[in-house]
Length: 296
Length: 242
Image 1 (cartoon, rainbow over the protein chains, first blue to last red):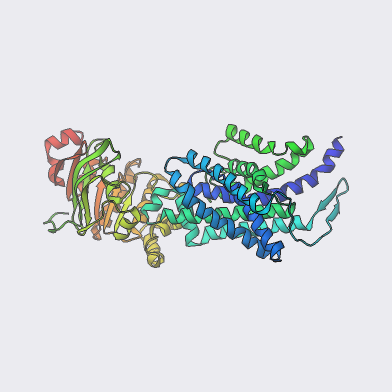
Image 2 (image 1 turned 90 degrees about the vertical axis):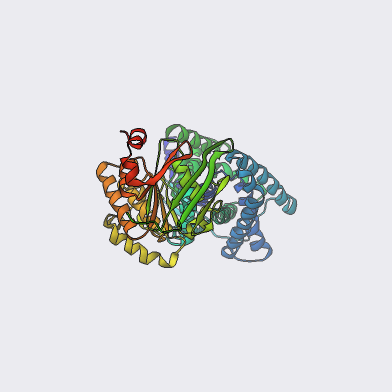
C-alpha cells in the first residue's frame, strides 16, 4: 500500500507543478485586477473560457499555430474585460466591492451563455501534433511527461517572465504597482487611476484568457472550462495573498500540487475540495496569505 | 522669513467649505493665503480641519463652497493629478510612500508628471539626501520613520513644486529625526519653495514660518505674523500648551 503511494508520488508532483504553473497565469490576472481595482472580479471564469475559444478559433478555424493563437487568447478577453469593466462594473464599484463582485458573477454567467449560444455545448479540442509521452524510469516509479504539458508550462513561465519584466522595468508597469500600493498617493503624484484601471482589466483578463487556453491545450474546452477552474484560481490568489503577484505564483503552485496530491487519498471528483480547504486553512492561519499583500 | 509680503498670494483659499459627508462639513469657510517664498504654519486643536484644508487644496476632497486659486487660476474641484501638474505637491501625514516599491522607484513616481526631468532630479535628490542614495534599492517599507518622511518630502520635490503642502511632517518621529526634518524644510524654503505646513508641534512650526493660521472648529480663529502669534499669551495658553 505504502509502496504504491510512493510510486505515484513523482507523477503527481510533476502533474501538480505543471498544473500550478498553468494556474498561475489566471491567478496573476485575478490578483492584478484585485490589486488595482480592489474587488474580486469573478468574471475571470467566463474570460478564461473566452480565451480558450478565441484560441480555438485562431487555431482550428483559421489554422494558426499555438503561439499566434495564444495572442488571440490574450487580446479577445483583454478587450472584453476592459469593456465589461468600463460599462458594467465601474459604475457599481462606487457602491462597494461586494456589489461589484456580485455583478461580476452575473456578468460571467451572461458571457458564458453567449459563448454557449455561439459554440454549443460540445467538447472541442485544439489542432495539435500528436506526441508520445516521455517516459522516465526512476526505479521505484515510472514517470510519464507529455511534451504538450512541458510546452504549456514553458509558455506559462515565459508569459510570467514577461509580466514581471513589464511590472519591474516599464513606466506603465510601475504606474500600475503604484496604484496597487497606494491609490490616493498615486493620484496625488499625477497618475490617472482610470487609465490604470483600464490597463489592469486589460492585462488581467488577457492573462486569464491565456490561462484558459493553456488549460484547454492540456485537455479540451467547453463553455464551463473557466467555471471549473475559477475556484482553484481564487484559492491560488487567496493562498498567496490577494493582490500579490508573486503570491499568486506561489499560491498556484501550492493549490496545483495540493490538488494532485489529494488523489493519493481522495477520489478525483473531490479534487476541487482542495481549493476550499486551502482557503479555509489560510484564512484561519494566515489571513493575509503566504506573501501578504505585496503587490510585487 | 521676515520682510514685506509680495502683494499677490501664490496660493489663495477663500471661504472653503469641505468635509467627508454632506451633513458634516469640517471646514466651514476657511481662508488661507500662501505668498511666494514663505512658510505658513497651520495650527489648531485636533479636529479643527487642518489636514482637511490641505486635502481640499490638493484635490483629494472637493470643496462644496469657496474658491482656491494658484497664481490666480482656479483649482478647486480639479483632480489631484491636474493640481499636481500645476505645481502643488502634497505630502500626506501617513501612507506617503509606495511601501513595496524601492526608494528609487518611489522617486520616479514622485516625478511622474515630468518624466524627462526625472533622472536629473533623482541624482539631485540623492546628492541632497545621501541616506536615500544608500538605500536606493531598498523597499520603502523597510525605511525608518524619519527616512520615510525624508523620502516623502523628496518625492514631492521631484516636480520642483511652486507650493509644498506638508501634513504633520514630524508626527511619530523622534526629537532628533524631527529636528533634522525641520532643518530640511528650512532648506527647501530657502531655495524659494512656498510651504503650507500643518503641524502638531506648533511652536516649532511657528518658529520656521513667516505667518501662522490658527483654525478652530473649521474656521479661522487667528491669522498673523508667526512670531507674534507664538509670543501672544492668549495663543500660548489656548493652543501652545502654556
